[in-house]
Structure formats: C-alpha cells, structure tokens
Amino acid sequence: MSRGPSVLPEPAIELRGVSRVYPSGSERVSALRDVDLIIYPGEAVAVTGPSGSGKTTLLNLIAGLDHPTSGDIRVVGQKLGELSEGKLTAFRAKSIGLVFQEPHLLPGLSAIENVAVARLPWGRRSELMKEARKLLEALDLGQRLDHPPSRLSAGERQRVGLARALLGQPQILLADEPTGNLDSRTTEGMIALLTELREEMRITLVIATHDLAVAAMGQRIVRLIGGSIESDRSVPLLRPVDTQTLD
Amino acid sequence: MGLQEALAGLLSAGPAHGYQLFSMLEGELGPGWQTRQSQLYLTLARMERDGLVSGRRIRQLALPDRQVLELTPKGRALADRWLTSAEPLPEMVVKLAVARLARPELFEDLAAAISDEIAGRLKTLRQLSGSTRIGFQQQALALEIARRQAEIRWLSSIRDETSAILAQPRAQRRGRQDEQGSERLA
Image (cartoon, rainbow over all chains, first blue to last red; front, side, top):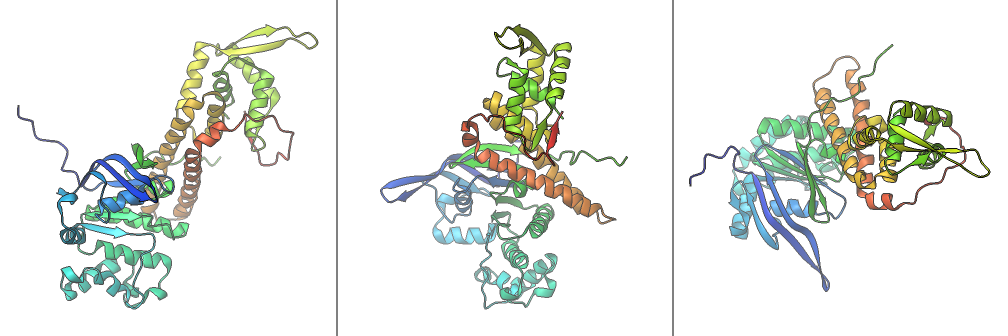
C-alpha cells in the first residue's frame, strides 16, 4: 500500500532510542536513557533540567562530539554513526555551529581572527575574514574587530563566540548555557540576538540551559530529568500581563 | 484574592471546620499572606449559601457546637477547576500551597502548567520589547520581563524540589509576626 506525501519536513535532528552510559570506577552512570527526540528545520528548542540531567550530553551527541552507547542520531539527514572521525569533523564544521558558556577565544588573536580561525582548514582565508567581518558587524562588534579578547566585555566575547559558530552559515546552532556567564541585561540582549538570527537565517536552534527564563525563548521546552525526557511542551505567545489600569 | 477557591481546594481533601481551614492557611502561608479569620467565616457562609459547601453541626462537651463543612459536587468542581488551571498568576503561591496540602497528586502538573503560562507571557513581552523604542515603554516592559523571569526561576526551583516539598510536614499556625507588606487572602 502506498503512503501519501508526508506533510512534515525531514527532521533537522532525529534521535531514536539514544542512551549514553559512562563508566565510573566499577559502576556505570547513565547520562541519557532511551531518548527519542525530533526537531524540525527552523525550530528553536530549549533543553532544560537540573544539573546532571543530561543536557550537555545530549548536545555533545547531536554535535558528534560524543557517541551514543545505543540508539541512532541523524542530523540534517546524516546518520552520525556511519561517519568516520574525519568525515564527522568535516560534517560538523559545515553543518553545525557550537556556542558554549565560555567562548574560549584564543588570547593572541583579534576578535575577527578568532571568528575565522576555526574554519581555516575548510575555506580561503580572505573569504573567511570577509564573512567574519560581516558577522561581527551584524552583531554590533564592528568597532571591536581588531581587539584581543582581553579588551572585550563578557557579552562581547560571547558575541564573538556566536559569530564564530555562525561562520559558514550552519543549518544547526547548538548552544550550551550560552548566557551562563552573562548578567541579566546582557542575557536579554543575547536572547534577542539569537531569536533574531534564527528567524533571519532560518537556522535550527537547540539551546541547553538550566534557566527556564532563558528557555522560554524556545518554541518548545524539553525537560530532562535523570537522563530521560520528562516533558516536551510548546511555548505559545500568551497575553503578556494583566494590563494595569490608571484610575 | 481567591479565598473562596483556596477554601474549596483545602476542603477537597476532606471535611474540616472553619478554624482548621484558617490554621492551615496561616500555618502554610504566613507571614507572607494574611488570612482574616472574620473574612474566612464570611466566605464560608457565602459558599454554603451558594451551594458550594454543606455544613453539619458537631456537638462538643465543654465547648460550643462546631460546624464541619464539606464540599458539594458544585464545590468540588470549583476546586478541581482552580487547582488544575494555571491562571490567575498572582494566586500561584496560594494555589500551590493548597495543592501541596490537599491534592499533592496535582502539585507537579500544576507547577508545570503555571510555568508554561509564564513562559508564554515572557516570550510575548520579549517580542513587544524588541518592537518598541518610544517613551518609557521599553523600561516598563523590562520590569514586567524581570517579574516573569523571577517567577519562572522560582517555579523551576519548586519543580526541581517537588519531592522534598511534598514530604515537608504540614505547618502549624504561627504566632502573629510583623504583618507589614504581607498579601491578603480575601
């Protein structure tokens, strides 16, 4: 019997029965347990949960930085388990941008060089520098291109890290506690920036955060508890406040 | 604020008399929330008039008769509705406290539903904030964003500690402390 055309697009990220067990002395610790998760192109999904619930493990597995003990992971249609380490690195460089809590910028390089350097093996220096400049200008760092990391604020360093992740226009952006080191005002700026970029670049965003106030930027909030998905709920736009009346 | 619903919620665990209900609210929520005993008895009388509770008189040997109240089907429907709906947000503390005491099986889902509600509001506020630059609007919205952030972070900690919160023993009524700044359950 033939099936009609599928209404849903091909998932950007698909996890089927994914578990990750780490040895810990004589014991085995389950960081993720039988996780099924589908994320469609252009979605913004926040992964939340208390410390040790498996958020970072989940992101590392999607990025191919770690491998599942069991289960399958597909990213933009590519089954990660079928790739050699070399091909996986090239695939990650082309398709996935990574943002971490601490951007780990190289101290001897300027902001623009920090953005371009990670992709040097996969592109021409002049083109990478041109794209890096455009990205930094778009992130309001046009006046900081030649500054070393030591002369940038925490928020500026994080934006340089974001520009580095976006170089090459990846289809997927994975952000692990990207606001963890930022004050509340800069955090709001980063949330606004990520939301705008995702909409403009049609990028698929997965953000891991313990902070539900940050997670609320997602269209979905996936909550992990003890390595399992406890809930996967959508975040609708709701009437924001009970409008106060002047009388 | 929501006293009728809070009383219906408490009574959904079983019959109780007025002073027991007063003690429970005072013990659980004081000194942040103030319950006026006279207001509570008035509200119970209104609930009886409106068919939400029914009372029966219990004789006591050395003390005056005591009226024990229980929910009618209409009152139970009110309690169920209140304890499973995320709105209205200003009452979330009372609602969660009542759920903890009377309907612990609803506590976790209620906290999650309220959290979703706030997340949706926060998202809209952020969208509005990004689209306005006039007057003092952005600063006014920033305050609302900060409030929703604080609420959602508070709920997050509540959800992470649900088991411990539900295991906490029921509070006894505390002596009156400084009531300045406490909210009123009326």
